[in-house]
Image 1: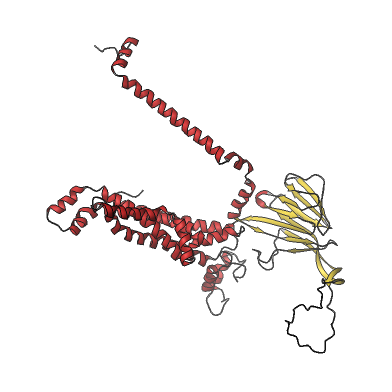
Image 2 (image 1 turned 90 degrees about the vertical axis):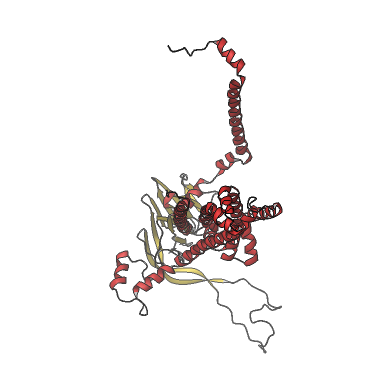
Length: 503
């Protein structure tokens, strides 16, 4: 017969009287959980207020953030249309255009005419009479006390030249900028905007500006935003256009290379069977040289700096392991019984690791100058302290039975450490050193930005220009690949050392 498990109120009270701790512990646990939850909520509210997170999010310029992200995977071609007071126009693409020295893109249509124009030109310098003596102690171009500087005068000059009378720039599929007769017409997203320019410094919109056009004050420039395809600025005497294209332009060959502008098939044909472009070398050697010394992407320099970063991480971690290994035996209480020695070595470790690697890098950059030596020294100092602490703690947690067993056979102290201690901690030491080597590959990139050498410094230089974001993306991608590779190697080695399968 099965006894009933239902208890009435009197029986529950009796149990509570005999065992009060059972109910109290449950209530105490509930109160503890409630207090912790309330503390977390209060802390989050305080952080939101203290760091003004709401204000930061509300005033953040997300458009600029989106533009920066787009710059990582795209490039801009920048035609500039200069407008003269008489309506004549000139089109240029900048000195370092990704289209080369003679750009003629299909999305730019120009109508040209040869006209005779009257333009302002510097007046010819008047011939000054020679003095009796031409000797002077003063520099040839130095101002004399009796002479007064006069502004350069200009005179009207007539010249015949070819000018642009009508220009049409197509951006993407739905955007068109047309300039003719001191009037700029922009079509975008189904809207049309017409701007009158005076060839000097005044812009006058005809009608209401659409949402994609901004003019801060009457007469000032008008900024046009076309989203991911680009943007433009219209001033009284110039139209600046930024046409954006997806991809990394001139990644293999820059505009100075004889292979520039050729398709992959044409390049392969030249390399395999074409006539030599440079009589002194084969086309394959010339192509490889052009790739390595690409002025826009600087592949050889980037790869060299990346190798410096890897070497910095490896050498710094290796030296730190070598120094931390003998010192950790002095810091371990169960290995070295002297309390004074333990404390001195442990405080030395604390000093090394309490100063961040970034700070050490700043210090050594001032001491040794910019370069990999400063980076290696920063990694060495920081990791010596951290690895020494980890190694000493591993020694203090060994199983003393193995050491006592070696001692019992009369082995020397060195043999006791060799056969009773090292087999227990050596896999742990190696595993931790491998992990720090992989981690320092990332850290070396950061400290390189302060002048400690490696790819970090080059990455910072590219970011400071605020225009080479595709180069930044390229270097970040290389860093990610290197980190992934060394992370996999480190995991495999650590798993083998610890007797586990790699994941």
